Amino acid sequence: MLAAFSITPIGAGEDVGEPVAAAIRVIRASGLPNRTSASFTEIEGDWDEVFAVIKQATDAVMAISTRCSVVIKADIRPGHPEMLTAKVETVERYLAQD
Picture (cartoon, rainbow, N blue to C red):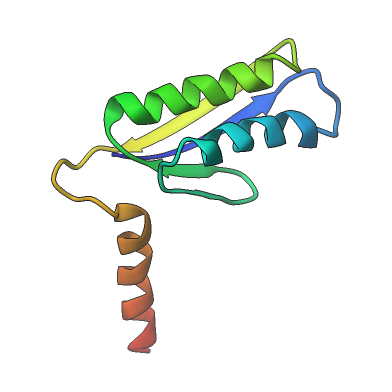
């Protein structure tokens, strides 16, 4: 599965860098393929692995903040590994035809 998610600390003020960094440390330490952008992090693995990492990352934020919001979008497609890069490569291939 491929999941795009964000964990947003609430009530931490405008500077949320520290709690977000705590979450990203957990995600990167998981060993699962992942990519972080300005608004979301994408992670790939099986259901149990991915949701365990999302929970651990949420726990890391909650250790610093008193409240957070979690948004998750999942693409579940058994038998299709490496979708984290394959989807982007497909779009880039079409763009290269222009």
